[in-house]
Image (cartoon, rainbow, N blue to C red; front, side, top):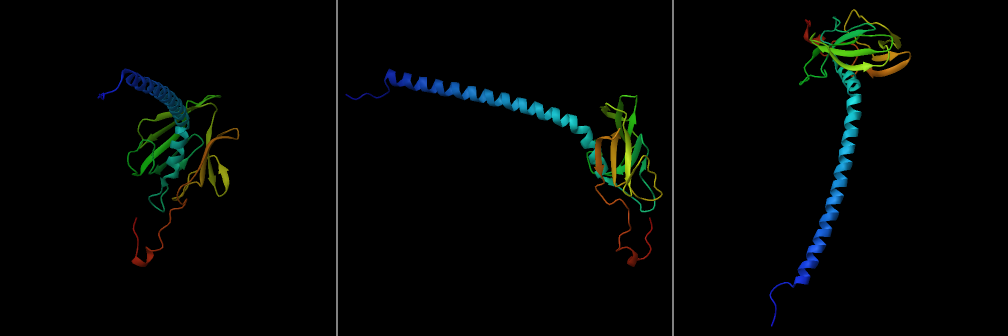
Length: 190
């Protein structure tokens, strides 16, 4: 007579194989998740330490000029302001006035702050040296920049004792020009 089922030995063999497979799978997955957590934490630390530089660089790369004859950039060794479409805390790419400044400077430390549209400044970095802003104008680095017309520096760097914290070039043309297409259509009023 023929049996309709599995013997006890067959069931036990299947259970042992399944338990071994499950044990190996759980061990492998726990190791994978532990490695993933370590990598994520490492990337988060690296990203958060570079974030102030990224915000600074992005805000200057998005610098814009509204009017070809009126300046909207002013820079000193401790502070500069300009209009940008890439402000750090902006949700949209609308042009906003941003001011970057170095405050609470001592002989060993400075705070880097920014403010948008003259709001309360936000400190984003404590720099370990006394830094200042330098502006690249006509191929030379200068400590200040106050143009008479719409022009921005070719580059800005934040430096202390010839050690740059960051250096960023303008992401757009440095001069605000009237497009060549406009004069044939008559007088252009700003």
